[in-house]
Length: 315
Image 1 (cartoon, helix red, strand yellow):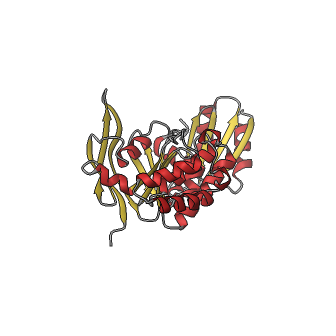
Image 2 (cartoon, one colour):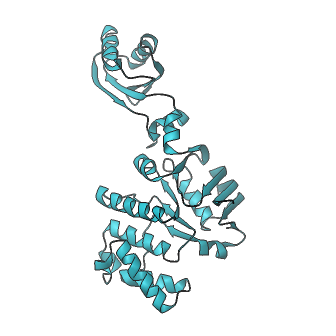
Image 3 (spheres, helix red, strand yellow):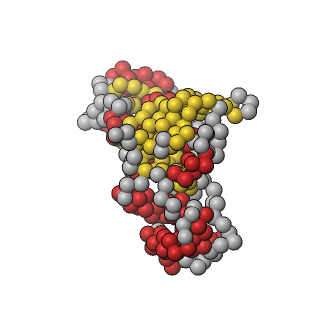
């Protein structure tokens, strides 16, 4: 039985001025998974989510959610999706409870059901004590939780979240992660866009790395991190000619598969770490450079992105 709930086929979006935002994207998202679109700002993540949620019309290709073509049947598609956008779209004329209650009524719930569901979600999202508070009085984290509660009130097949924790403080971010984990445990399919590596690593069952509208890689976070084939990335800050030092390190240190100079530091991709740090210091001193700082980290999603694009994700 096909459990694919999101499928894109050569999905493409070109904005006026021949700006290619999404470039022939093929994706499959399975029922019950948290799927992430990871990439820097401007990579095409929000445009992709916009096409999947009927807000952006594709230039070419197809997008299906729950088997429904979102372009051919947008009204039917909207019944299957819940959307939490980047911006606060709560109704400021209503209080917290009313934002949920009237959303339920809009989606065809009777008054009794809408009331019961609103109270259930207020409890689930830790907002019961804020039920009669104006939405303008909510913190950023509370507003984001309320928008997420509203988005799932009509029990959508897929919940879309566009940069859900952007601008939130660490405590609010962790609180939202916990709630998304609970929704996932209940079987909710979730697609989120993010440029936070930690968020993608911690939340997503699978993720797609996107840059300049193109799909670069897709797999589980662990498989992606394992794909770079190194045990560690070592960063070296040192005095002197860094390009020369990088060449010396590449030639004289065994187990280094790649060396590059980026933003005033040397990065070494190493197949092992045992004895590597003191060896780097010795080689650098012999080459006439003084090492100011030295650090080693296990492969991260940032490492994967650098491996694929040659640049850091935050760019």
